[in-house]
Length: 471
Picture: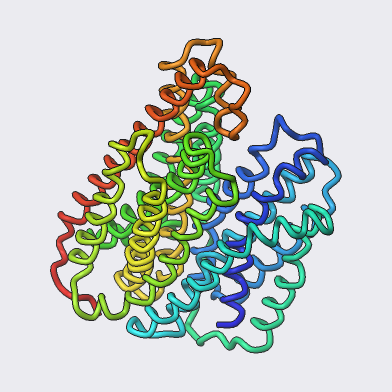
C-alpha cells in the first residue's frame, strides 16, 4: 500500500506540477507552437497503452507489469528533465505516458487482488488521499522548484520516488499465486486500437485550429475503432474481452465514469477563467476553486463503504448526480453580480459528488466481472476517464471559441486574451463591456453542455437494471 500510495501521488501530481512549470518550459525550449503536445503526448500514450497493459496483467500477472510501468515512467521523467529541445520533451513525455498507462489502472487492480469488496472502499479512500495531496501540493511544489532551482527539477523529483516504488514492490510485495495460461498477444487488436485512439485524440486537438482536418481524423478514428471492435469479436484471445460488456450495470459504471470525468475537467478549466476574467481575481486565488473540489473529493470518498452497505448503486448515483446538476444549474443564470464565493461552493459539491460516484464506479466495475478479468475492467474504466477528459476538453473549447467568434467582431477577438489574463485596464470601456458580455455568453453555453451531460448520466443510471445492494 505504501508503494501504491506513492505511485498514485507520483502519477497524479505529474499533471498539476507540470502545468505550473509550463510557461518556463515553453520559454526555455522555444516551443510555443508545440506547447499543447507537452500534455497531449502524455495523455495520448497513457490512453493507448492502458488496455494493452490490462490484458497483459490478466495474462502474466500484475507485479512485473506494474514495475515495468514504474521504470518507463521514471526514465521518461528523467529524460524530460534533461530535454534540450521541444521534440525531445514531447518524446520523453510520451514515454512517461507509456509508464502511466500501466501504473494508474494496476494500482486499482492490485487493491482488488489484495482486499475484499467491503475493505476496498476504505483502501480506495486512502489512495484518494494521495490524489488529494497531489492537487494541493503540485502547484506549490512546481512553483517552488521553478523559482528556486529550475524547471528541470519538476521532472527530476519523480526519479527517486519511482526508484523507491520499484524497490518496495520488488522486495515487499508477494503477488497472489494464480494459474496463468500463456496465450498469444492480440497484435492486430493492439494495432487497430493504437491507430484508432491516436487518430481520435489528435483529431480532437485539431478541431479548434483546423476543423476540416480534425473532423477527417475523427471520422477515420471511428472507422478504425469499429474495425477494432469487429476484430475483437472474432479473435480467440481478444485484447478487450467484449463479454464484460454483457453486464448492463457494468456498462452504466463505465459510461458514468467517462462522462463525469469530462465534467470534472470542465470546471477545472473554466472556473478559473470565469473568476479571473470577469471578477479580476488573482490566478492563485482562482486556482483555489479546484483545491476546494479536491478536498471534498477526498472527504466524500471515505463515505463509500457505508453508502454501498445500505443503498443500491443506482440510488446513490441518482441522488448525488441530481445534487451536482442542481448546483451547476445556477451558473446558467449567473450574471455580473453573481457572488463569486458560490463558485467555490459549486466546485466543492461537484468534487464531493465525484469522490462518491467515480470511486463507486471503479469498485463496481471490478466486482461485476470475473476475477480473471479484473485488470481489463480496471483498464476500461481508466481509459474511459482519460477519453472523457480529452474528448470533452475539445468539445468545450470548440463551443467556447465558436460562441466568442459569433458574439465578437473580428477586431475585438484578439483582445479576449487580455481580458482572460486580467490585463484589461488599457481597453476602452465600450470594448471591455462587449468582450466581457461575449465571455459570459460563452461560459454559459459551456455549462449548458455540462447540464446536458448530467442529464445523460442521470438517464443512464435511471435505466440501470440492478436495484439491489451489491456486496
